[in-house]
Image (cartoon, rainbow, N blue to C red):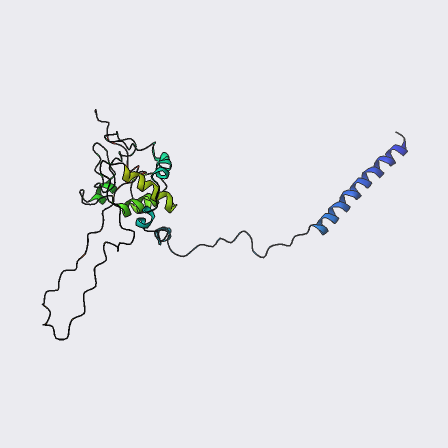
Length: 237
């Protein structure tokens, strides 16, 4: 082989190597990034357990009574479409994954005929003493599993206040005689009136204190999205 070709090949190789090294050095100088002081990413976590954080999430949940005053039944019917796969709402309708929700407002908890409720739901119902009033529906719709730990309801909840109010207004309309709407400015049911101050000249108070006038806290009832549990064995209508 002619030596001139060998020399040319060696020269070309050295030239390419020189260009590559020059580009590498120049790139390091232009795009240099310093080594971080600490490896990885800092992840900040709030102190306290996950349960405590979850329990505080509902702090400040808006009362349902003022929202119902301007709620839309039509809007609630549209929002309820996400619940139709699990619930029927017609009078005498069949249970699905969740119970039928006809006349649900003020209905005793866990009272749908033929539906197999979870232990959490039946325990919560206190044998039918508790009912699905407006505030119970509001709380349950917002976060079912947080409101009733152990429920088989798989729905994540409705976080928007106006959407929940619309759905509850729609559920209220699904009854032969809809339940009365709560007063928007009504005091909480568990607030007892303050006793008047004793007159200095009044006779000594009886040793037995007067019973505080308290109203039983409204019971809690299932929502349009209450997929409480696995349905009971199908019944023959």
